[in-house]
Length: 172
Image (cartoon, rainbow, N blue to C red; front, side, top):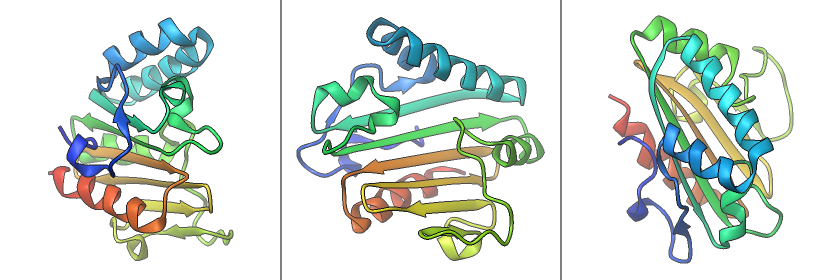
């Protein structure tokens, strides 16, 4: 699977129950937080309507309570999340990426914001953007027929780069 694996994350982060196929993740999440699960299910259904054939999620946290938060994002909890969807062709993948993945849409070309990098300078290809903020770092990109999202909370920039560097070569 192209998502983050246990060997990709620093010591002290443990895999959350439900990591793996998106349907399993959503089912486990619905038991913990039905409202969040409904929102995430809607986002997944939107990607399916845009042509996603399959998807997977990996979530690793330093505190199990973050397993039931939106991609592990809880103040002061270290977390790493990844999502990868596969599409039938590059056109579908690109259109889905342009429209946004789990509410994270690429900023308009030319937009300047603190911590924002878009395109080839991210190191993830022309169809990519990265937000680098002190507590949350996010990367979203399209490679071939895949769309990927990596979110890192309360971890350093090197850990974030290692996470995107682990997922990116698996998108082939």
